[in-house]
Image (cartoon, rainbow, N blue to C red; front, side, top):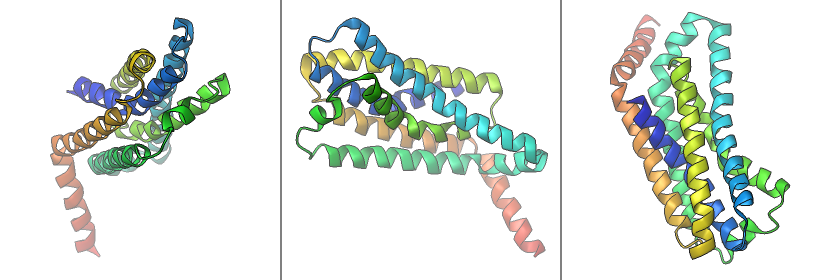
Length: 214
């Protein structure tokens, strides 16, 4: 099941990079394959790296604060996952709708595609993935890192394909891709929440127990 979640997250999170990659392809219709690969690498690398940073931050807190923190945090992981993915998904959909109304958005995004510009694009499209590492804090390390690898690989593949789609057809699909990605993230948020219903109930019971004691 975690593999399905990782695949869904990978596709959902890659949609911002997909939209920007299409814009880059539109701006340079004669782009060489080497540059297209570099664009995809940047997006894939940062999309994988951001969740790792989030995961390491949370696991470091668990080690420093002990078993009590880990137990309490485990109760709230489903809530955190739902909240973060709802936020990211809705944000992606709203921004996509707003940006679709802007004239020449694609040209602005892809203008002057230098390494510096590509670096900024990669950061901008992957920064939201930082919070995804928090969702995997309760998983075994190997599951977390494999999941982050899947996210990075999927982003690389989707971004590479998107560059060529942009070169051929422009960015007509870019906003639709971002909207689809937002819907996927929202769906995964609910899936994680309800598949961990026992933790949700345990967390609620713990809160009411503390209130009763007071």
